[in-house]
Length: 451
Image (tube, rainbow, N blue to C red; front, side):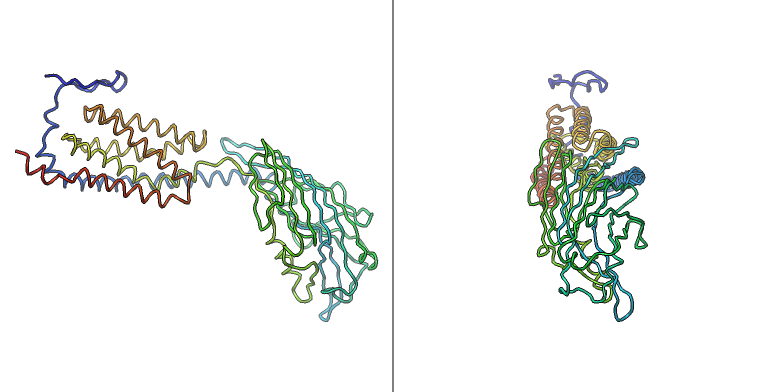
């Protein structure tokens, strides 16, 4: 009597041989060799740890290549920027000789606009931008106020401005107290500039000395500001769809629309937690500048997620996928009373172990999610067809394809919900173990019943 199972469609795989397969229906041989086969499967699964480790090394190499390429792109344009200042430097006499005090603005208003662009080198990309900013405000120092050092030299004051990378800086206007001044490189560091502003009358400073700075600055990836003013007010706009706000202070107002965002920060001296004047005479100046830098906040121009982190996390589930493949084949042997050759175990496991490599190769061009879907579909079709030929059972092939597809879908959800990945992975292992226990619950009774 001929086998009435529906054959697979003709194609590169060809149709599996029809007719009964008595050599595969050997219950006593199956149950007698089950312990040995289980041990072989465990050993074979461990063998696949080597290619998975090699793929993990490749992921690390590609990720480092991406970072080097981005550094090369941004190195010729400008790095990540954090605007610090303007600060008023005031030399003064002290018990140990000459020292310098730094005064933060009483009011600091910044209106800025970002013009981001994506630059490519090969298949890698980096986000750079040009910042157009106007900084307005005033310096105010009451005579004899708290923390004001004695012996101030009012005739040798300086204005200081710094950023993360000043190679792409262009100054349009620098005015203080209605007078234009010119910045020059500072002896303090390569990303700091000073402007000699000469003398300011102390009574004028007590009333408030206004300043205005208009600048254009090239940078990349993120832009930051510091709450230098006793009252700091910053407005930033950019045509970018995915801003990532960072730092201690979040915008008091923000609007994220299609392809652009606007953000507004307001920080007071009470919020930032430190004063407005310090001196090098007691080392409080360095502490003030350090705390000012630590209080930086701003926005990061979030780039499309690279596939490397997703593939790296997927590799942690590599042995789980291989183990599930072997468990399904073993369940088919027990439930369907068939024998699957060890080479067929090995090749199906190899297909699963190479899934992360396929995901990496496609993900570099399409992104993680499309690559995951494409790689999963290809591997499921490949292994389901192979299972059809190995078992001669279309039902088992359909069950195998559906189970592996469900496993890939479940793992994708775990990869997206990082905080739930440990719980989800543990539940998956528990479910797999429970299924194996159910499938093998009658092994002893079946073996004794075989004539």
